[in-house]
Length: 436
Image (tube, rainbow, N blue to C red; front, side, top):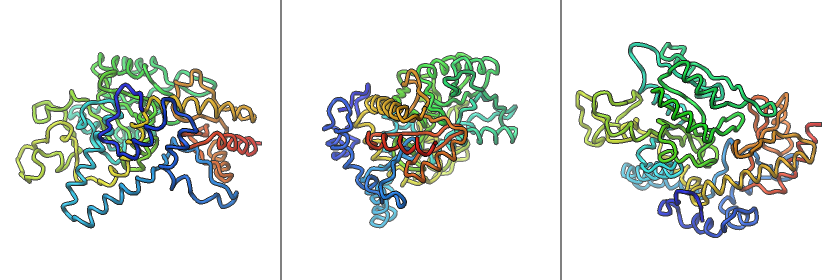
């Protein structure tokens, strides 16, 4: 059973996943995972063998695109079956799936209200919804953001600046470990103090390096609030890796964005925006925070089709919904979230840290010097191999049947619960050979 501070919502988890995770025992081991969890992934674990090498590919890009459960296909087909069978009556089932998606994300975030989670098709869409709620008629928005934000976030902010809608103050990393740039609390709070921005945009875990802002993120957010600055946290590389617990441990996060593409195993398009409850329940009052990114699902009494001259919003987080959304994305993300909650993020985190330490030791033993963070818990669910031409090295590894990716000067290796020690040892041998 899971041992997270928040008990898993067992009523939201299907019986076959509960049966598998209940059989795991207290500590995760490769043997137990192989026996009880791997059978839930038979399709992806039985992919065609590598055409050149005559063996299966070693997949170490789990931090990029997570591997789906078998039942994910059944869930997506179930959404289509409703359409074929019920036609417009399928909306009842689709709405239930959307509500379950919101409830599961809320459980992963550690928040009590599911309506604080608003489905989006990308994290960038969530950012735009926030920016378009804060736009001012008298001046550009003042924003502080780090240079470590993901490309979409970086690009959207630069587009708002190019349009004259925002002035963005960029924070450079002043710290570093073994050549890996690291953001410090002082880097970010110093920029907030210097610019007194309307909004701070900061990652909970940085996509290129894996650096995790754990306690520092909460302290940064509290500092920002004392300066009357709202905070948007990008948790894409943190949710499912480190338990955020937004409600109780950090009430200072105003907004958070993330998605299911990676660790949650939900594929593209299943993303979300979290809105702190203090910004909800006042949507139809003067001065309330309301976004321009809206549509008929954000209307009060949506299906009455009434058209008031003044826009009246639905209660709570529903006021941040938009137009008709792609409900199939909710279906594709359900199984991965159920599995993650049933196992427990804290247990998954402990296993990931131990697995990465093992992997780095194996690679070091083959003469491949990975970045070795100390302590390991200050970095996320992938490990870095510095290289002067990381993209070319990653491509060469893929040709040899080791699937990684590269960001900047680093090849990223992301093992997970479906990787064996044998795979890590073979990947180390191949990497050492390719790098000669």
